[in-house]
Length: 341
Picture 1 (cartoon, helix red, strand yellow):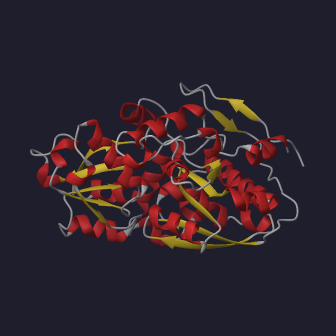
Picture 2 (picture 1 turned 90 degrees about the vertical axis):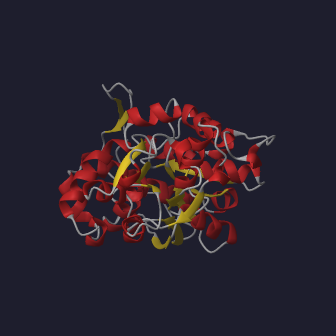
């Protein structure tokens, strides 16, 4: 095997980029069949998962991965805690919140370096809603209550001095059901991701109030980087199955490298057609906009950890007084091993 190297980017973010496309292979996974939970697999937020699945990166590493797609990240987390899934691709913030609850859940590879979540409002409310505080008393659609999309709105409300319980949160899922909820007038605003948001924007149903699809937008909202999707699991699973975790991490790193080099057309060809929401050109445009949001290293940076914690502290009363050791929210050993080849 060749060593995977990284190269400093010339971008303003000084991000690290994958430059060696040769796949790495963990040896002898202790658990060859893995059940993985996700909340909204068709969202571009979770594109590395679909790529790892469809391009055979799991199979190459001796893994049979069964994917259970839930209505939102909170439900995938519940499945992990309940023991019906082994690992989850979900929001990094869950590792912090679960630590406060006494649950040792850790991320092992970063998939997204900024959230990609958008808060959009029904077009007919353009004159009435100018900031998050104007959502008080309204119905806001999120993928699922307690999910990262819910946290995103909670944070925006908290910045405006509005308590989360002043808004009615409604779970609308992450695909056609989310689009339909807005089009049918069942919600006043929506926190979701592409291609859902791209579809609603194109059809003229919404206007954007807050946008974390870009590095600039993320900094404007959070003041810096904010990690998004990660692969996380229980510390107990990591301890018992280190080779399995290594294989999973390497598969996701292979997916991230592939996405980094692929064209939007190649990415679209790799995913199921139902991901297009009936409009392939729209999906291609959404992919092109979303490519910068994927992790360049697989590592959750310390700044991102701190920003995620500060975001949660704004609105999550369960974290008040809790002792959070951010170093325990991310186990970087597996990414480091992959980097050494």
